[in-house]
Length: 87
Image (cartoon, rainbow, N blue to C red; front, top):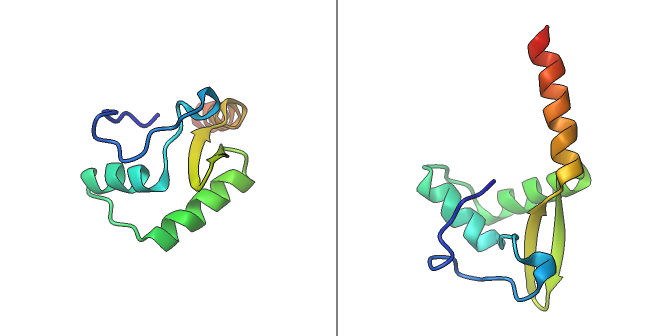
């Protein structure tokens, strides 16, 4: 899960529903700090793909979007990885 100092985040969610969520600007900031260069367009594409795969979900707060991990989607990936690594 993304770990990021809340004081450095550009946007913090207002609602409890989105409290663990990250806006795209903050995701880009974390990625850049990790040395990963990605455009806004490419990030949007990948976030869309992750949503469609039910790995993350979107919570809207006014004009802001916050993305959160879907625990069920992560459990599916974890289960698949365990099966693959046993072979």
